[in-house]
Amino acid sequence: MKHHPETILVTHDNGLLAHWQKALGTTKQTVVTQIDDFLQLSSPGSSIAWVDLSLTGRPPWASAMWRGILQNDQIRVVAASSNPNDDEAMLALDAGCAAYCHAFSDAATLKQVREVVDTGHVWIGKSLMQRLLHGVNRMVAAPPVPDASWRKVLTQREIEVAILAANGASNSAIAVQCKISERTVKAHLSAVFAKLNITDRLQLALRVHGIH
Image (cartoon, rainbow, N blue to C red):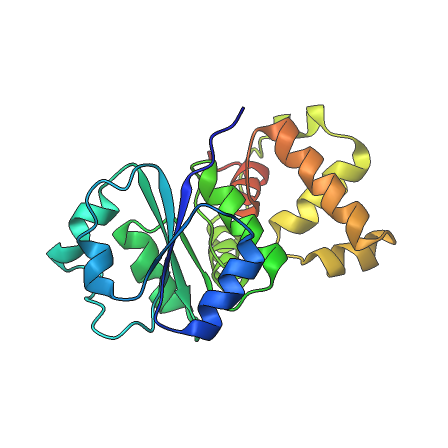
């Protein structure tokens, strides 16, 4: 039976707290309203901490005050911003956060963030993902001998969906181009991720473009 980590909700915003509690739907919760109290937590055990970036007095990521939390393998920090931007995301992820997302994302997105973080991977938002994918595409404009071995384990439709996703197309755009539903696109991508042993679109882009 899988052991789920404790959820730590770090915010002084009652509205945001209620949204997180409803969306995440877990009974193992600890609520912390002051950033100093969170930073001074002593070995809370395996946990995912959702940190409201609008908290008053939050020290910059480079501050030594974060070291005990961000270097603790038992704590995975989700940086949640009410006004997200790519530069803030890069600072949070570079500091060691496991995820960066919109604080008021819908329940499905927040649960997906938790699932990705719980498996030990990093979650980044759609905007930053597109930025990274475009960077990858510029790096590999014309590889001399593309590695197509990843295609061998996929069906023709999965290959088509994988190539579109690896070049930054959204699920809705893929659905239109392939004349299938978004639900079918998601199913194909799930199958692609499983067969290629990857977890997200950035890894898919690297694999499809031969950077690995």
